[in-house]
Amino acid sequence: MLSRKKFKLLFLLFFICTSGLLAKDYTKKREVRLFIDQMVKQHKFNRSELNALFRHAKFQKKALAIYVPSLRPKARPPRVRKKQGSWDRYENILLKESKVTKGVSYMHKHRNTLLKAYQKYGVQPEYIIAIIGIESHYGVNRGKFPVFDTLTTLAFEKNRRKRFYKSELKEFLLMTRREKVNPKNVMGSYAGAIGLGQFMPSNYKTFVVDFNKDGKKQMNHPSDAIGSIAYYLKRHKWRKREPVATRVAYPGTRYRGKKTGYKHKYNRASLKGIAPKNKFNYRDKVHLIKLKRTSYDELWYGTKNFYTITRYNHSNYYAMAVYQLAQRIKSKYKKTYGKSLI
Figure 1 (cartoon, rainbow, N blue to C red):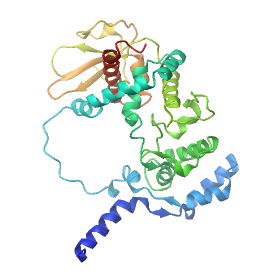
Figure 2 (cartoon, helix red, strand yellow):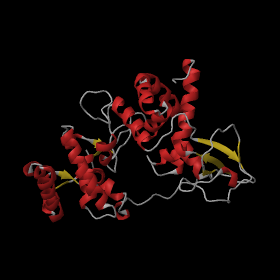
Figure 3 (tube, helix red, strand yellow):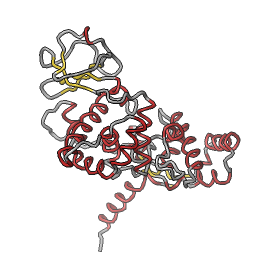
């Protein structure tokens, strides 16, 4: 039998684990009622159905805590770790050998769809696979947050991105109606991103394609996800058969010359003392991408295609992780199956 002290402890743990999922009647909020009015008048939604949805929404504390620090649990004292550069840490998380191996298997399983996407949009298969690997670990981790509840919480609880999430909530409801999906059944990330490629609801109408021609646009379906990622990159001016990045040499171990990152680009002739380590047939302007290692900086040229990847996620490290994971998957695929996919 549990002692009173142990019972109280178990109850507290249960409360902590479930406190982020408390049912909340959002129709009591004036701004929610105004939102419902807008959806009824402008988009012809059924008022009773929307009232029922918002009346039984579940408050998502964990999602809101991303933007409201006071809701976060007290941080544990940091563990003493061996000093690492920021890229070393990033690489250890996103470029594990297990992610490469799983990516090779996923590429082989969906090779026909990937070839179809390459023929239609000109995006090499390894980049599509790398994005799926980083975004959802090839479908294993698509998110455990109920998207309707999450977007409702972020749209109508106080936080700095309320306006953005209110717009995403509107697009989510429009998308679920178009696709005839129950909005309560869709799971995603803490920010409301959905599926293998973690698309936000606002991306659905413009960038998600029905690649398998089954009459539905589903980012949880491998075929639609592959086609949609390829289409997204193509729409953001991906250039077929052009390189993405190459490592360069420079004097010293820490680079403090010109500004680095995807926001800055240069004629290569102006980059004195910097030269590619390998053959690099690319004549357009380049970005300088700096990766901070523990005891030195790696420096890379990024091309227009590198910039295109940053349209998927506005991060130099993200785009470099996609590039390097793609190259490792491509190399291992060739070793495993005796030939490249394309």
